[in-house]
Length: 170
Image 1 (tube, rainbow, N blue to C red):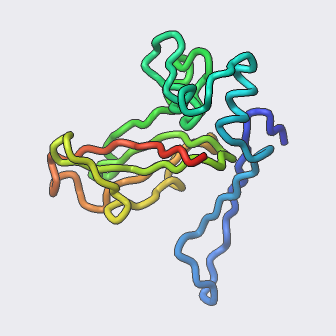
Image 2 (tube, one colour; image 1 turned 60 degrees about the vertical axis):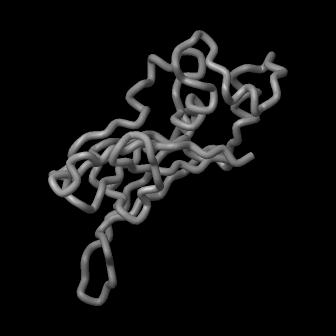
């Protein structure tokens, strides 16, 4: 398979049998061409840049509203992020539960994505204990896409908000 787009996924189905201890009937293997970090991304897409990495991360060339770090983390088009906005976090309902879907850069070694929750849009905290990964339910061949939803129905917490915070760990 061609890995020029960064990753390919392989879907495996395991036939259920009484002797198997399965939580799910699926598994996904993500094959990436190579592990990458932000410095590699900067060198590949902006070879003339001499800006220190921390400063480069905060830059927004073209005043698009997306920093270099966001472009890297969500695998946006480096020079025209508007062409790949479908990879940004998107909040929607899944079976009556608030959910968030976004793309992660396959093979990145220096990022951590944290889904955060707030009831007032002022105070945010990691939503790890309230979330479940339902990525296998995505009907997408895009190996970058992930989907998480709150375990509590949206009707039980009508003022709940979600976002994704990217932590850069050089």
